[in-house]
Image 1 (cartoon, helix red, strand yellow):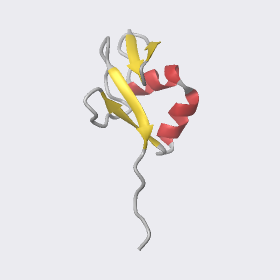
Image 2 (cartoon, one colour):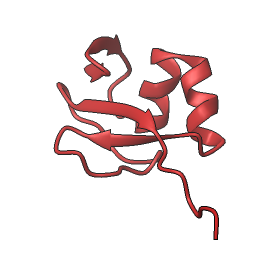
Image 3 (cartoon, helix red, strand yellow):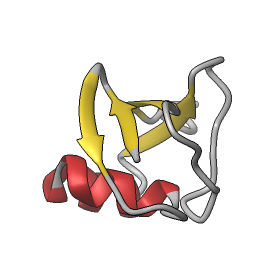
Image 4 (tube, helix red, strand yellow):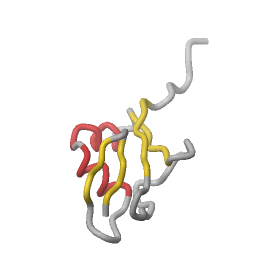
Length: 72
């Protein structure tokens, strides 16, 4: 199946999950998502789980995670 990740097409096997698409896209980005530095959004801008199912033509965006907390 062909999946869009940050406007780049990656090819993954049928039945692939979000994590599989990220690994096909970039191992560095995959590690950043695992570490919480980046988040994965669907085409509508909603967060998706790494074990989320994909369909042919799915679109994903990987963005920097929002900072939590702040100075008091």
